[in-house]
Image (cartoon, helix red, strand yellow):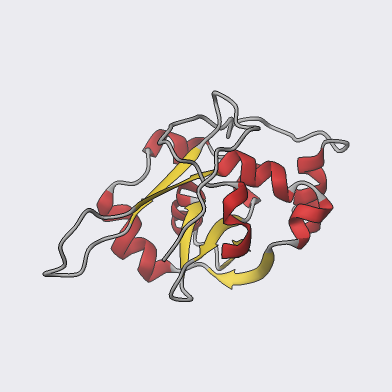
Length: 171
C-alpha cells in the first residue's frame, strides 16, 4: 500500500499531536506502524465551514462505558488533575475520531473528556469523524507533543471555534 505523508506547514510549537501505533498480529514480523496527527490543526480545520463539511458529525452517541472501563482507565491514558479541571465549553467539545482502514474508528482527541463523561454519568456525546481522504492535511512525519488550554473559561462568540461549538450544539 502506498501512502502519502505530509508535514503540516501551519503547525505551531504548542500544537497537540496524537500518535497511534498499530499492533502486530501474533506471529507477524516487522515494525509496528506509527501514525501521528496534528489534533490542533484538526480543531482549526473544523472551525471553518468548509472543514466542518468534510467531516461526519455524529450527534447524541452513547458514551461507550464498557470500552472506557476496559481500555482508557486501566491503561492510565489520562491525568487525573487534567480530567478534574475540564470546564465548559471544552467539556462539551465533540471527540475526534479517525475513520480507520477496516471501517472502525480510532479516538484521536477526547480521552480526558470521555473519562469525565463516564465519571459524571453522562449518557450521550457528540463526535466528529475524519474520513481517510482528509488525513493528509493533519498527518505528521515526526512525533511531537503539545499542550491545549482546557481551562480557558470561554471561547469568544466571534472566534471560529465558537462557531464550531455552536454547530455541534454546545451553548
